[in-house]
Image (cartoon, rainbow, N blue to C red):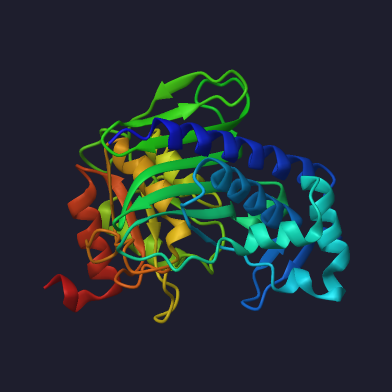
Length: 325
């Protein structure tokens, strides 16, 4: 199936959201953020990005539901009225409309039909620090990711023309990096390393997102001596997809944690269409058919095809030695 129209809408929506995020970040203050129940931060840029993208999707594909990370529950409270007014001003919409757009990301997902999944800012802590973050949008049909767009506002472009890149992949059509200023597109591929002598890890900055201690043990098992490349967000998927990093590991930091689909859908298809392999720590493909969570998976392993089997074996041995027997 051809997804030309979906691809165009997704790229335009992500580009618009990137600009909003950059504008917010340029004048950012502590008043632009609040803390969610899970103790993670959310900013006016997260909310505005989600509303902007959902508005674009509703305009072009009004029948498509959205699985989004954010909801407007706390924004509706009087104590957060100033935050809502700030978002409304950014989007040039009234507060009620903003809340309705944000809450339109409440779809449950699942194995049937077609829906989009959206992380309006993946790596909010990186955004707050002025470092790496991503706007991640993916289209899922019958439980399979068929289109993904990653907007990385602070990531240096592969053509060395400055910062800010968009990565797009359509199932069966390869992966490309787009210069958002010129619109130029370039095909990207993962590294073709067949051993670990020159390989390097890519992992989260935040130790709460991935176990750095386990990563060090896995690197030792594989003979990787290059220091890890640590960046926030699904920019890590982009780094592997364009050959900037060899292996991305997201290793569980607690037994009860379940990954969210919006944290991986766009990045996973970009890597796969760039020739890479994506699975969980047991070697199972990521299953996006279970709803809003990757309930059948634990952690994430991303490599090229040649390093894949050895990396998964090392992960199994390190995290659960009996599982490798």
